[in-house]
Amino acid sequence: MDLSFPGGTPLREIADGTLLIKGKGGQMEGYYLWLQPSPDDTDIDCWVYSKYQNLDKRPLLNPGEQIKHGQVIPYSSKTGTTDGHYGKSGYPHLHISTMKAASDKHKIIGSQMMTKNSTLFDPLQMFMGIQAQDQMAKQTYQLKLPYAVPDERITPSESRVVWPVYCQQQ
Image (cartoon, rainbow, N blue to C red; front, side, top):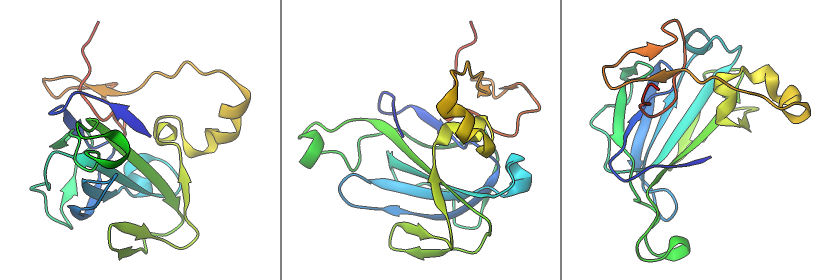
């Protein structure tokens, strides 16, 4: 999923988890990181692997470090999008991918995460629960996303997940 934000927008971790790898990929990837929230971190009955791409720089965080939901990771940028498909000026945004797997066992090959019997899923399901996929195709939803505001408060406070950027309260 691509989420368009101006370059330099602070990005937030969507769930508690562990930083698995960070690096710089090629075209369409830029600076990236892979995070691994556990089932206990999300209240979802599987392991989640989330990849953030097109970051402004390689994160200062280190692999193995624990990250809290709502914590700022690097900022949005257009790394990975200049030249090629998007033209010389690029396209500042966050590309976020999520995979689910029954196990925390994984293998890193280059910038890719490999897990046995994993499947990609829509990142919005982090806010709805993985099991909602069948219902999503059949109904229209009004989804209330948990969010953080600039003073670091998360609404609702008991949420295990949070939208990946600050929101302004209305």
